[in-house]
Length: 613
Image (tube, rainbow, N blue to C red; front, side):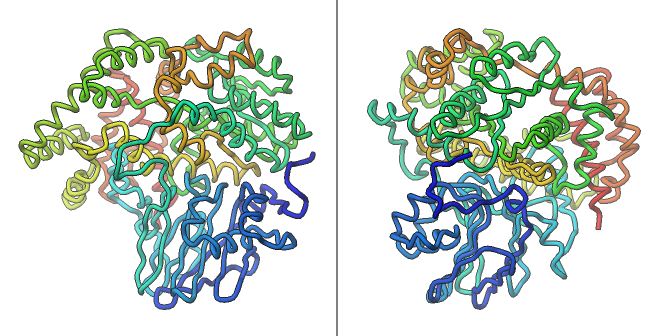
């Protein structure tokens, strides 16, 4: 297999070395990293650089820094870029990585995670130094790092609240969020955002028609960055996101002289989400070899929920994705076929679609025709009831936020107090029976309230909040851990920073071309795969499948959790009350929200048992 990179700039990184453990220590008094002997690092005068992961666009980086081509190490390229461009150079790096810069003349150390967080980064403030690693487990290997659990985070998780994007379920271990960096200087540590797709202090500068016409070029570049890192597969569903990635990857592989990606597809038998016929047609039309596994075939025995809970034993957090066992089996099938990098369509739902809270911005400026168009766009793109959609768009995401904005301006303290009471009222009574913990939860809950009266609008507020949300980090960290177990890398073209920067500024009529969400890729696919009618496809729903799965397999899980003794012992739940309430909900009120809480409570109980110090 050939690549587009000149051989002088190829630094082969196997999936195994991509997941090598490492530990970095930075002194608070005199920032000077102690790098692991096995790591690739560079030194140039008083500057040192540590790099771990994948670095894209290596040729361009080398040329822009006028670097001697004989020095092709990632760390050396990054160090030269920093030397030429200062700290601003970090925001222009692309890939899945952690980078550390030790700048001795400035008595400064910077440790950064890639802009969208494909590579995890955790740290522990050890007093005289700060320890950094890709996993909490690596940090625990350092003497003196506490394994104590974070009770408040565990309790808030059961309430679906995440007040602090830096915290983890271990009290001592903190996270550097995507696009953030940890800076050690002046004998202190602080963590700050260094990259954002849109400015937080001024309105979005929407793309011109000419700029928007460059989407295909940016998309192709994002996909091409994910190729050339060993034999490639793609998780191919019947959705627009993964199909668009597969189509572009297939064409680029042929152009680059690379082998086409292997299609890895999971088939669900439930009628609401059965895409097997379409998945097979897409693979056939693109000329891709395909492994199409039925969900039950992929899972095998024991049940998928039991296996998902079992994965939590070796995980740094309770497993979030209940379908991971099935996708793990699919990835292993690809690995046995030689695949070392798997592309996904993740990020498409986040960046190719619009927050419905855009309705509030449109109503606010009197753009009622655009609101009506937005409603029609959602209606033509989703399988949903008209009344529910209208209520959600016009009231929940439109008029109600504006009414709240008015009330907040008139009586901000009373309004925020009311919002806080409503937030806490939704908590089950059996969470946090320990009074001290419940008081701490109440104090923390205020941090989960989204900012009211955003100066730049509700749409931009949602973009910025979503970037920092704990779930965004958690999901990518979970995939990193699964990839490490299997021996493959997961890469996501829609999480490419240049793609995100463009899509956040894409005019609505371009993004929703043809009057449907994701219209910009629908047009592309209608040209590439005209017989599949993807320009008219509506997004399916897996809710009914999830409900049936939990109702079928859920009762057996209660035998594992019993009366939740581990969570009860640390005061996070009243075990007997939790068991009674969850069993009642499973039997008499099995809506998705209650069923999800049931699974995650049982899963968290088992995770706590396995991770109690």
